[in-house]
Amino acid sequence: MIARFPAYSHPASARRQARWGRSLLTSVVIIGLAAASGHRAGSIRADESPVAVKAPHDWPRMRGLAGAGQGGDRGLPVDWTTREWDWSVALPGLGHASPVVWDGLVVTAAADPEKGTRWLVGLALADGAVRWQVERPGTVHHTHKFNDIASSTPAIDATGIYWMQQRGENVVLEAFSHDGKSRWEVDLGPFTSQHGLGSSPAVWNGLVIAPMENDGPSRVVALDAATGAERWSLARETNLTAYATPLVLDGPRPVVVLASTAHGIAGVDARNGQPLWEQKCLPRRAVSSPVLCGGRVLATCGAGNGDNLLAAVRVPDVAGDAAPAAGTVPAPPVDWTLDKSVAPYVPTPLVTSRGLFLWSDRGVVTSVDAATGEIRWRGRVGDNYFASPVSLGDAVLDISTDGKMVLVGTGAEFEILGERALEEVVRASPAVADGRLVVRTEKRVMAMSLAKE
Image 1 (cartoon, rainbow, N blue to C red):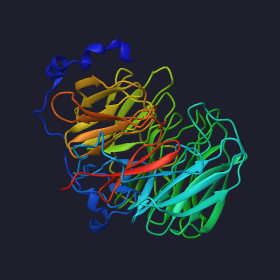
Image 2 (image 1 turned 30 degrees about the vertical axis):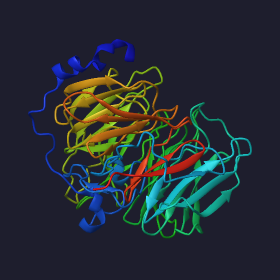
Image 3 (image 1 turned 30 degrees about the horizontal axis):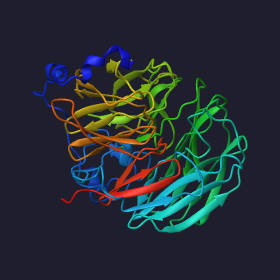
């Protein structure tokens, strides 16, 4: 908890902990040029490190390509704290779904909290013009006080948009074309949770992978992105609703990485849902999403009281075609863990070329050696956070629930580079595409051009 380490925000304390003499990452991939290098939307190879050195063109899912939060090598302009936004557009309702972007189209969701009506909205990245708006009927159902009925982030690829929405007791996954026309919808069944729906899909190689890990019968299902036909379904044990967005590791045998209390960090064959490995290392609720970090997968779990845990699990070599024998799914080793003093609960970890950065729910940023888990420095930025941080040049940006944008340096010492108050509620994670930062507040979407190269 924050009260346990107030001294870590002091620069002298940060200097004593900084150690920068070791190699940070085993390999580098230019994920900003993913299409040119053969990456499918939302995936990354298990032997790559998600460090971007070019500006991303698209932002296909929650936190961009592979959920890595890589905004590229262009930072915010020097006057970003006072500069006018390029555009700002009010949404038809409220919500916390994060924006996604494909080929100049920004998509997010909103809802009327009193009537239950939902909207999926498409905006032009260049000027914020509303390209289309889709309305769907719905019902008002119970959610956590910090959740709402439009918190599921859509996924998007070259062929379509995929949106999970709750209608009554059931969840419907609906696919749209880029011009907002419905292509198909599938009823995924009931979703039972004291906190409400908040799960988001991932799309990979013609499959839409939807997590339905709730307090009732749970499963993860893969649908054909073109038709909605079920390609595979994997039953999952039930133990606390999980909200992690799946991570796809590409390769000869592509792996979907899932995070939940019941199964911990687990890998299944993306082609057929066959379990490949599982490490039950997450004793509490999984809300943040798994990310790749130097041949390891990082995932966190936690609770509202701050009893959080981060685990780094080594990714096994599953290149062969042979499936594990029945009842013998191997458990890969946990290389290191971090406890509640630094591990976030809701914000997802961020890997950069300068190491791993953890932005806690309670406003403390921690710089960590990505290979060993050793803490380098910690600094207090204040406020509370549900949004996940993104990298912008040599800095890390996050936005508090009260709408305070905070930019932190990635150097050897903790340093706040700038702050800006939006004066609106923010629980969605920002997006970066085609040289623009896209921010979604509870009521609107806005964009700002990044610094020139």
